[in-house]
Each structure stands twice: as structure tokens, then as C-alpha cells.
Image (tube, rainbow, N blue to C red; front, top):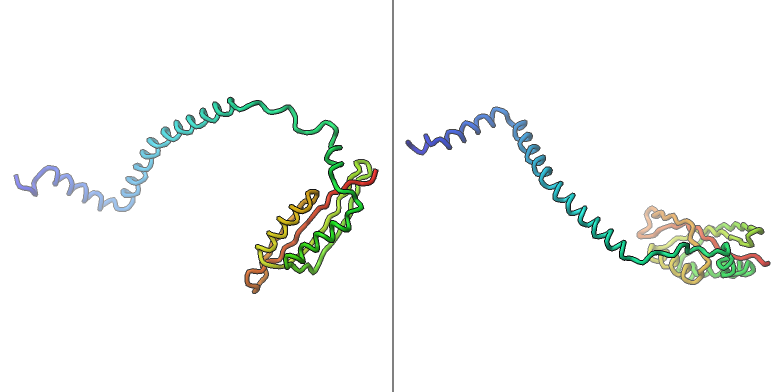
Length: 184
């Protein structure tokens, strides 16, 4: 028996001829079959790992101390209202907010103001809509510093828009809310 007549070589030649005859559909079928077998072997292992992780998390969660029944004060927010600055400081706080924009080098060509008071709750909100223009870092610094300086200030909305043709400049529309308490 010669090397060319070896049974394994004969079978390999036949398989190669059949593969050529069936072309790419056979190759695709083989690849998909191998992928299905690999998935069938891999998924149960991964599922077991996830089950083990869930069990560990449940054990850790059970070891944590129980939370208090309620973190909300029972006096209906009176402590929060008392901590807010008085309404009489509205103009000074607004001036400080706009002055900070100027300190950060952010021109503000347009601004809008809207006052809203709830006499029953003795609370007021002063909404300030500012449009500023500058680089992103300056705007981000302005927002962070404004929130740091005034604890009763909230950033309600922020829209950023890149200015066409301006290298790195951004136009920002900032919606601020100054929370205040009304006089008793």
C-alpha cells in the first residue's frame, strides 16, 4: 500500500471534493454548528457563576444592619423650610449668581427670571434662566462653584450646544432655581 492509497488520505480527498461541491453553505453550516455547541457548553457554566454571585450578594445583604424605618422627618419638612434663606435675600443671591458667571469669564447676553411663591407652605422659588457662552471647562467650573456657594440653589436644566465655527466654544442654557422661605 502506497502513501497515496492510505485509507485516511482517500477519505480526506473525498471530503475535500464534497466540500468543494457544497461550497460556502457547508462552511457556514459547520461554523454555525460549532458556535451552537460552544454556546451549549458555555451557557451552563456562566449561569452557574451568576448563581454563585447572586448567592454571595444575598449573604452579604443579609449581614448588613437593617435600615431605619423612615429617613423623612415627621414634622412635614419644617426643618428643611427653616434652613432655606429668607426671600429678602433673593436679589443678592441672583446678583451673586450672575457675578460668578462674570468671574468665570462667561458672558451672559440673555437672562429670564420668574418668581413663584406658595403662601400655604411658606416657600418660594425664583427661577433664573441664563444663557452663557464659553469653553466647556469654564461652564462646568461655573456650575460646580455656584452649587457649592449656595446650598439652596438647584440646577434644574442644562442644555449645551456647540457654536458653529467657534473653536471649542459652547453655548449653555442654564435653568437655576433659588429656593427661599417666605416671612412668617
